[in-house]
Image 1 (cartoon, helix red, strand yellow):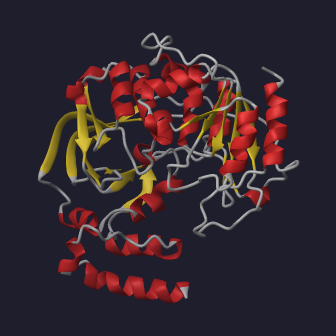
Image 2 (cartoon, helix red, strand yellow):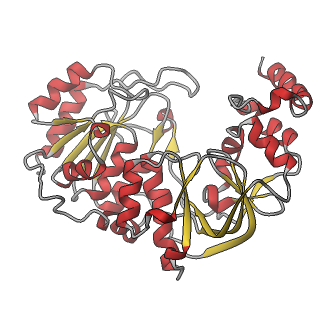
Image 3 (tube, rainbow, N blue to C red):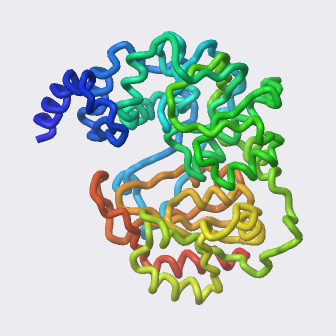
Length: 392
């Protein structure tokens, strides 16, 4: 079936790229892994998606299927991750081009700029597949000039991976790396996906970036006089300490005293909600945990909550990025059935936190299924809480 879909999709490309339908903005290229790259190559035969730069040997986010990790009573005890020294350096690309709401940067000759997207080529295919057909059409038709032009120095602070948990360690840190390399950041303008969320504005201002330097990015094909690309950020004690320093305590004179155990709930989110939360809440209440819906609070108040916390619990997600602002403590992270994503554990290792990953009690599930919920074993949760709370 997949092969047949692949054959049909690729055969339609020749028609689509010359058809009026090609400009329909709601269309996206196929998300089927088996045909994603073939369609991209067919639509853009001159685009080199292998990327410039990048360092395959550098530390990547860790990810594994639940079945590939041997749990002890469904709690994974893993050795701390190893980290390469954070790279330093900045490259400048003259007459670069940027396209797509999930921004992709290209050299003047059409080669993808690797470090503007990610440190390795592992994300290139997925990023290409999310270009809209009209964006791809723009790349094919305008190889030397576009209607949009930005003069001076510009730096991308956005990509397909732009959520709270990606933007802080992957994009905000570029400002520090630029300064480490001797760049004057006051002379650089920064492209940030529109609308620019409140937490980004807060942190950019705290980092000394003025409002006049922020350009909301809407995805239109744009030529840039000088695209400034720092080495892709990596987590390190020095880098995370810089992020934490942007929100120095005490904040606004208010404190969240006594709330030492926080449940970072995702019940208002579309993915990774705990489906047996009523039972889980009984365990949480027994240990005096406070339920926090991070999206209900301004960013600075979220930070105030975690500043006084000793333990964070919740389903895997971006809210665990708040651990950067937390005193050394404990994280208990519940994973869905289809993946175990260990980036939050990597951050915990740098920050000096203990990290306990909990497996979904229903067992692993292959990726691609629609069930994105999480089920937590309440007996195991109570046991892990007992271990960790005794250390307070």
